[in-house]
Length: 180
Image (cartoon, rainbow, N blue to C red; front, side, top):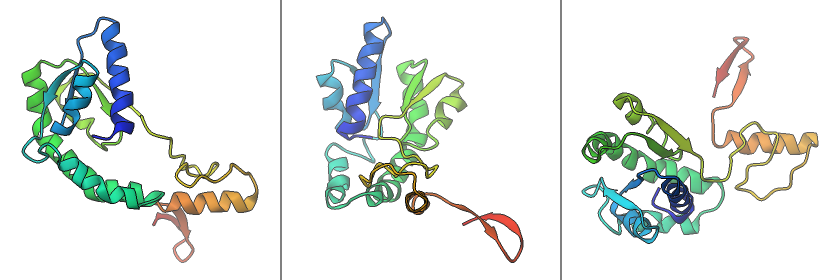
């Protein structure tokens, strides 16, 4: 994700791996290159046709007007599908051309792990954002609500979590569990 909240932790991890003697390269769309350069990391460009320099900033201008789950929904609806599709198309060849033997993936890109799996190379996933606890035992981090264990608070947490995922419920007519 070409955003500082994703790039800075990944660059820090890359630098740590580099300090331990690993050859490290950061792969990204053109807007990622300045971050890689600032961190003194080798950079491999991909998806430059779909996401030319400056294009991701245009996609994210709307985010500044959003709050809470609307930010997540915008990302999932407007940005992630296109960049994941482009990555699925271009990443295998980019990895092969660069001679990359293992990957660290930002988990923000759902299903991108299919690329290293299909290539038979090892990978790890780094979660570089606040945890979204969908268990309902804590409030979602997007709302700034206090942690409480009252029945009302747990109900509130469950309702917030339901906004972002399917919630199991019982279909009383059929008597079976369904996802809605």
